[in-house]
Length: 254
Image (cartoon, rainbow, N blue to C red; front, side, top):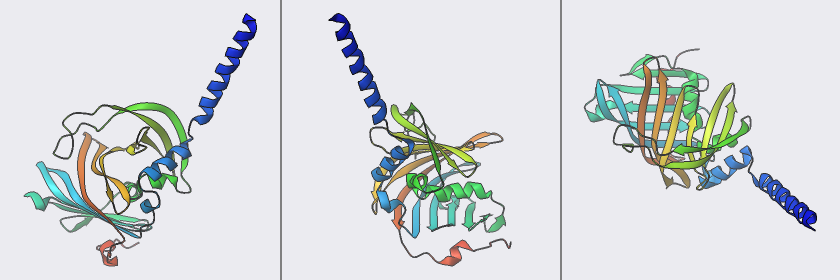
């Protein structure tokens, strides 16, 4: 009788574990749930996108510059960082047009790493970019993430927030591996990391059907250590008129 009871308990525990394992979401399932939490089809159905806000820029001292992002699907992007809005002297433009990338400082053209601005283009789609064909997803062990992160400047909290339980998904884009951190409770996309940089997202708000962060911290590895750039998004608009010439100014000839 005792042996039969032990066998029944063992079978019940085994069945419970099997059911628990079966209930665990896949990497693709986690990303799909996060896409819905952020607005679903609204994240990818735009033809043009305009984001405005501020960016903390370093030029001897910290300036709160004006930030403007203009995107036109599928592969045109212009990002402006304007420190002259806050006593600064520098105005930066960053461009992507097809496979061509370039920059300007105070209207003087310069080079730009194409992979860097392509990441910015990918980020225009939020978590939905990682649900697109061609992205290889792999589930990693769950983790805890101190969120939001600690950063200097008005756009970020003075200290790191409480630990959040997150799903961790590895996404391979071309030859680059990125790690995505998605909140298990809210299913919101809190952070993404590449070998070169980390972007953290918080203070989410709905704009035109898209649930997007209004606070972003980008940490980039440099030869001197790392740079920390806080952004604030104040407005996100889809399908607004954007002239084609904005993506061709001083474009290098192939």
